[in-house]
Amino acid sequence: MNLKDITLGQFFPGNSFLHRLDPRMKLLGLICYLVALFLAQWFVTYGVMLLLLVWGCAVAHIRAKTLLGGMKPVIFLLIFTAVLNMFYTPGTPLVSFWIFTITYEGILHAFFMVVRIMMLICATFLLTYTTSPLSLTDGLESLLSPLNRVRVPVHELAMIMSIALRFIPTLIEETDKIMCAQRARGADFDSGGLIRKAKALIPLLVPLFISSFRRADELATAMECRCYHGGQGRTRMRELRLRPSDWLFLAAMIVVAVAIGVLGQSGL
Amino acid sequence: MTPIIQTKQLTHIYSPGTPFEHAALKGIDLTVDPGEYLAIIGRTGSGKSTLIQHLNGLLRPTSGQVLFDGEDIWSSKERTRQVRFQVGLVFQYPEYQLFEETVYRDIAFGPTNMGLSPDEVDHRVRQAARFVGLEDHTLEQSPFDLSGGQKRRVAIAGVIAMEPKVLILDEPTAGLDPAGAAQILGNIRAYHREKHAAIILVSHSMSEVAREAQRLVVFREGTIPYSGTPQEVFSHGAELEGMGLGVPEMTQVFARLRAMGYSVPASVYTVEQARDAILLARKGVQG
Image (cartoon, rainbow over all chains, first blue to last red; front, side, top):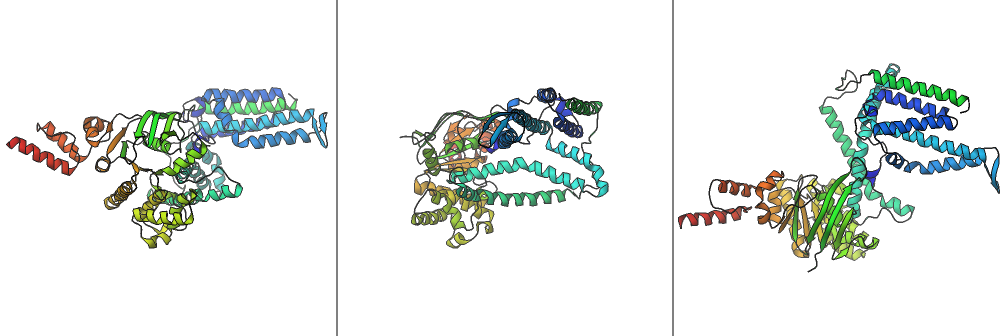
């Protein structure tokens, strides 16, 4: 496996409607979407949710293949959920062996559950694919800023988050490089039992830790050199500004959530 | 004579099928003879690093072949692993890959992975340490207590200890002071001479490669526009400048002399050659 091919949390630059949308509205819109997803009940409501997702992908020019590729790490979770739901939902028995019974309701339930988790992940990916980590944390900071009044260090938390996000690709690249260097010296990361595999990680983890600390140190110095002293009185180069289209998007998402809720109540 | 390394129409494409798709190598044909000292020059992003990672099987070609001793390095899993020991690769800033408690154990990592006997490993570690000029008491120190230049020499020793038939070094002198750089280049020369190993030096210091290598290969956007002896390559001075590579200072001086109308050769690149060329030119004028 090539570490560079991990698409989790990656940002694909672009200039579509979704890319230009204010990050705060995108976050709130995503929350609406996720709420709606949990209110969805039956084929009609799920269908609407799926259509929305497809529309989002089409607008942002994200291929379904890319989106589904990010699903790999959760395959186990999906299967696990499906199996549990299949066996533990009471209802009309379809197949029955030993102490297990698969019910008709169970299969439907499992199906909807898997679809729900997949759509949940896809929608979240759609957000990270179309929003740069920087504007995402800016948006988050701005949304959470009321918490400042109750002494939650919102700016610091946002800074921690943006630094973490910023360094994920750097760390992946670094890991890849050290892995290559140790492979060139005959290290074998792929074969052997669990203990051998764990031991084989030492030549990777030690240099990685050392370089992370070095990086953290350098970053702290660089920030201090630029007189960084927390969020107080700090101005921004890029101010977030809401446009009518941002409000329209949020309004539409709220309408969707309410509508799905109503439709779901009536069992559609 | 079979080339020790040969690439046939080697092509590599990064992240195919995504918006980041990028062809780093475009049909590279390159041969390296046993015992040859070769230098690869090119700007950042010209495909040099991608190429060298193919030569010892760290990257798999998108299309094309890499042969070691006339046989495809991907023919079997075992073959790939063996080739990694035969083609030693020292990455850029290799000091960041050190991880063991002592210098000795770090250098021994490669030979131990090869499955050699403890005696043989010990012999190789000491020999490799000697090649890079590390003293015996350094072997028992922690690599993290050493200076930057020493760390780098430990990392290079870690590859040399596998006694590869081909030693590839990616910018081995980057970030070192002139004395440290000269020392490392001297270590590489010693290994080249004593073990008759082929050396591939990746660099963008023109005067460095001109002094060290017998043959130069120029990279640009995943292709090889020029290759040959330093004289041959530096005779394309203007084109190299156009590629943002520049030529050694001496070559620049001689280009200016030619532009001023003196009949001196264009392919001069060391001070000694410059001296001879100027003496010859003077003789020509007087005689």
